[in-house]
Amino acid sequence: MFTKLSTSKAVTFSVSVPNSVSALSGSSVVLPCGLSPSYDAKTFEFRWYRNDDYDDPVLLYENLKVQENTGDPQYRGRVSLIGELEKGNVSLKLENLTLADSGEYMT
Image 1 (cartoon, rainbow, N blue to C red):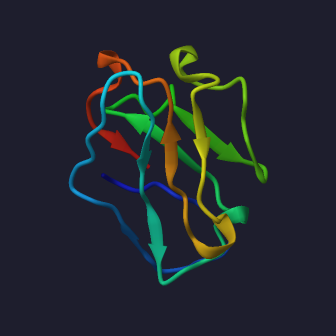
Image 2: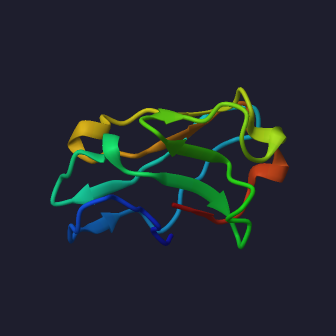
Image 3: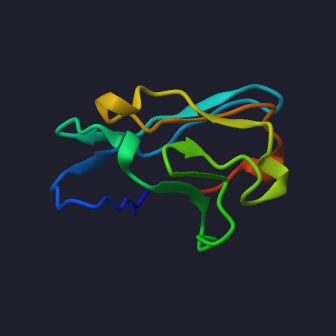
C-alpha cells in the first residue's frame, strides 16, 4: 500500500500496513493502517482507493469528516473508518464483501 496524506504543517511519519488481508464473500474485513509515530490524523486529508483510481476513492476523509457522497458508488454504505484518528489509526472497514472487492487498496 502507498500513502498520500496531506496536512497544513510539515510532519514526518511512516505508514504501517500488512502485506495482505483475506476474508470471505459476504463478510467484513478491516484493512489496518496506522501512522508511526502516532500523529493526530483528524486534521489530515486522506483517501482509500484502488489501483490507480485516485480520483474515484473508496473513502475520502477531508474537512474533518468522511465525505459521504464522494467516490465510487459501489462502496457507499459499506465502508467506514474504524480507527482512532487522534492516535494515527486510519484503518478501513469494508462490509458485505463481494468478489469485485478483491484487489489492492491504497491510502
